[in-house]
Length: 365
Image 1 (tube, rainbow, N blue to C red):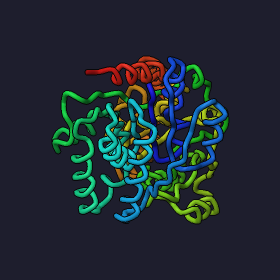
Image 2: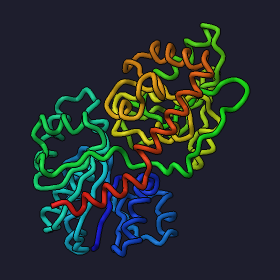
Image 3: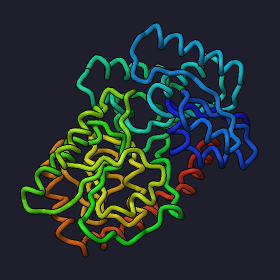
Image 4: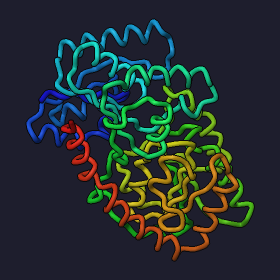
């Protein structure tokens, strides 16, 4: 089979879908990886994959630009003649599905990897438009959801066919690479690993970093990740630098070896507004870290409140601070939660399980 995997960044393909691409290649499929250009394209090519650039304005809403992108994508699909096209992230799902339909691609698979900026934004017109585009694009396609909340929302809006969907929680984590490690000694480190977007709860994390020292709680607060200029919710670099100048947080920037980074943490926190299934929380759980996250779709798929972490109300920095204080003051509880989290990651989120479920879905009639 010839299979196209299409995402809005080469970083996404490398960090989230590389095991799937490797499994397809190992079984003899011809794989084309499609995305805008970035620094990870060379890494994909070095692994022996055929990668092709497809320019896509992730944040734009210009109908002329988007229409031309759809035309280029249709031409590409007609030229490549894939047996299956699998799309990830909102624009790729929308335009990829429409182009694949028009090009006569026999099997179209779409992954709803969280509802994204559009569905947590206050722009009602944008949500309405994207919902209409989803309804048009997803007809007669096969759809993978990462969490039951997103699946229920799409079913309620009648955007998908119940006979053509699957629930596969996340993109999986290599639990052999992400191993449990003992907590570091010294002042505890509370870490938020994510793209630095406001809707990842960065503001609430920083609010907690202000509250806890005022209560006499000693901890270091680390933001791990890069800003994302292509996202309307990006935290400006100058804001991050100002927080550093005020000694509120440490900004560790982008890190490649996340297993080593988690080993430097005591607690991992993600006060996100909404997720698909957050890979960072699964990685941290696999490394034996207690978690604090918001009680929202995606996060509650990973964090079982009181078992491997604590869930808090969304957009509530004080609640984040309270949960962190509970864990900072109870090292034994952190260890207990970390052990439960490790077992959950192995049993439910191992990448081999996720890839196998995806390959089986490709064959579903």
